[in-house]
Every structure is written in C-alpha cells, then in structure tokens.
Length: 304
Ligand SMILES: Cc1cc2nc3c(=O)[nH]c(=O)nc-3n(C[C@H](O)[C@H](O)[C@H](O)COP(=O)(O)O)c2cc1C
Image 1 (cartoon, rainbow, N blue to C red):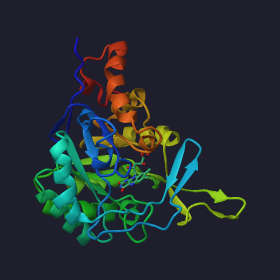
Image 2: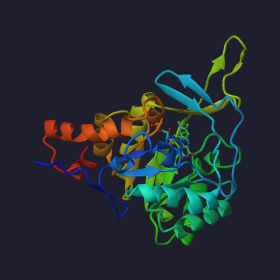
Image 3: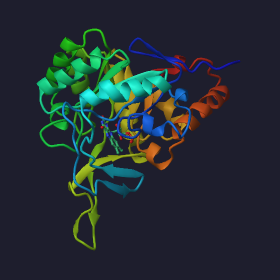
Image 4: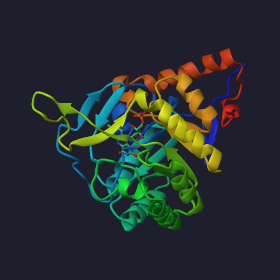
C-alpha cells in the first residue's frame, strides 16, 4: 500500500512533515542546486529582523560533542528583502510550505516585521523566534518570560489575523509548559519547540572562549531526548499544533517527535553535517512506516 506522509500544519497541507529548521538552510535558494527542494514538506527560512544585520563577530561556530555551538546573531538582509526578493525567488522553484522566521528587539519590531510577512502572499506560516540566545536585548529575553512571550504573541496576532503564527520557544527555561500555555492563551496558532541550549566552549591553549561572543546556542543530536521531552510535555498541556525541533537526524527521530505530539518536524544542525539529511529522511519514512505497519503518518501524532 502507498504510504501517506501528508500532515496538516495549522490549516496548511504538507506532503510530508520534514522541514529544515531556521538558520540551517538559508533562504532555501542557496540549497536549490543540492537536491530538488520540492521533496521537503516546508522550509523555515533564516531568522529575519526589521533592519539588515551583519550578525556577531567571528568565530561564531564551534564544534561540540553530539552537535555544535553557534552564535551567528541573526545575520539577515532585513524584512523588505525577505518579502520582496527572497521569498518570491524561492516560490518560483518551490511549491510547498514557506515559513518566515521573524525576530525582533521590541514588541513593536516583532509586530512590524510580522505584518510585512503576513502581507506577503507566498508566505504560508509565520514562525516567531522568541528564543534566540545570540543577540543581546532581544530574542531570548522574550522567550524566558511567560508574560513577555504572551505580549509578543498578542501583538503579532493582532497584525496577522489570517495567517498561522507559530511561536518558537526556548528550552532555556525551568518550565516550558507555562510559557507554551501563555502563548496559546494569547492567540498563538501553533508552537515550535525548541531553539538551541545556551552553551560554551574554551580554547585551552589561548585560555579564551572559542566563540567571539563567549556563549552560543548548542544543538544537534545530543539535545534530541530533551527536545522530545519538551514536545511531549507541551503536547499534553496545549491544544495547538507543534513543530518538533532539536537533535533530529533520521526518520526514527521524526517518528518519535510525532508520537510525542509534533505535527511536523524540523531538522537543524544535521543539515550542516549532511546537506542531504532531509531528502534522506523523506525517503526513509515510508520504509519505517512499512516496518511498523503505519499507513497514514498523521495517525501517529500524539499517540504516546
Ligand atoms: C547555525 C544555526 C543558525 C540558527 N539560526 C536560527 C534563526 O535564525 N532563527 C531561529 O529561530 N533558530 C535558529 N537556529 C536554531 C534552529 O532552527 C533549531 O531550533 C536548533 O538548532 C535546534 O535544532 P537542531 O538540534 O536540529 O539543530 C539556528 C541554529 C543553527 C545551528
């Protein structure tokens, strides 16, 4: 029997649940020569702010056991270039879900950027990053307080009433459920769980941090069990769809994330190690489904 990999994400029908995570796949276009992008269920684009940003000083990548650290600091060309150039160019070659990932340094900036993204017909979902650990005075500051996360959610929903808004949460909190609930109550249409964990490495010869920014976001296969636990906890507490993210490297991880409650699954750092990991996972899923007697992938969502 032909396997059905399709899922519904906040009203958007995706051919499969596999999505490259923001910041690990550029604006899609950079990867167009690597494989046919249309095998991907959706693409989450690089985090975008109101103004263009050069990002943090280098080095801003460090290797680490089971993953990597990054302190890229939201390098991006700004929201106007995203909606006027990047997204229209991607849409010419890509027919599935396009997710704009938006960051800001104030509630007003989040709302301004999201309003522009909402007005762009080719953008299907807006993912609001309240969890970037690599910029000062923005990002994470909003994602570690239930009140601030709710304030951003409400401001964004007020200007994006007709577009699905997913709030991307930080794992750097004691109680992710209370923040997820606050976002749901404030009108979020969905949640992305999780962003990177704050981490650090030291160059022992120089006796200095490896990253110019001292600390950075840790992600990759090592964080998978923690991300999975958070998806599971939030899925049992909230009623809105979840994009699971964190340490996913293979089809089996996708199934675990979905059983824990994710409607779709993002792959991040592994794209930097193996640029073909997403198409490989899409090809692996029907084989795993066959082994496990699953005909419709959506049937396993939240079954654990
Ligand atoms: C190099 C790099 C850049 C990232 N940039 C962003 C970003 O701009 N916006 C965002 O929401 N998340 C960003 N992330 C976080 C990822 O989207 C993802 O949430 C995180 O890495 C966990 O997934 P993983 O363990 O599969 O990497 C970035 C991650 C990496 C490795």
